[in-house]
Image (cartoon, rainbow, N blue to C red):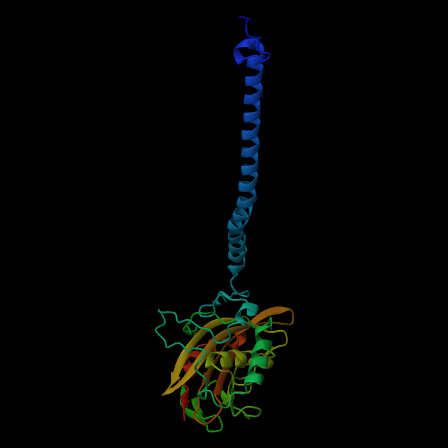
Length: 320
């Protein structure tokens, strides 16, 4: 019997070992390269999605920092060392305050009732909203008059002793009564006000103390506080040109059963090259069936012995 023909194919065992090792190395390399490419692609996807998260997380810290830096407000300029005239700091710039007219918070230490934006001098009737908004917006942009402090601050006791009084002046046109001083002050022709008292002229001084009352001469606002703010700005018409204000008091008051708002302030100005000040205050009082009444007093530093008369006036205003 003839032998079977030899097979032309070779098995794995017939290959030289170096060929086998080379094939294994090549296969391993392919596997490693494939795994590496997969890792790179996955990492790219992760970094692409992580970047926006990191950016979004960082954004609030930038906004917070800028907000914090803008929140700090320096104390009002023009501080005076005289007791009772230390200025209050205004926590809001006028631009910020313009977005929240009438906003107010009560200082618990004062113990006074707060007048909020809902309190109007006549219960909300008779207020020309358009005129009120325009007048208030103009006042809030006036660099001479800083925004009112958010908290209420009572009028401090000013230096000196108050002059003696002789009853009350009954201002029926305005609907209020105020002290009639018996000494130092003298009655004067009221025009353009409803009542007026003046201190004597001081040699070499252009201005002297004045105490007046009248119906509020500016557009009435939605709150007594805002109306008083505008009235204080109006009083600058009766001070030297270029005068500015720093606040010393801002508080709700009662004139009998009627609500009101009191503002104390220092008026700063320059006369003959010298810096001077006047102590001033006004009471804005709600009067039934009338416009609110203003009682306003200002006394220059040349007559500062009479500064305590301001306390007497502000504590004695009554509604007729």
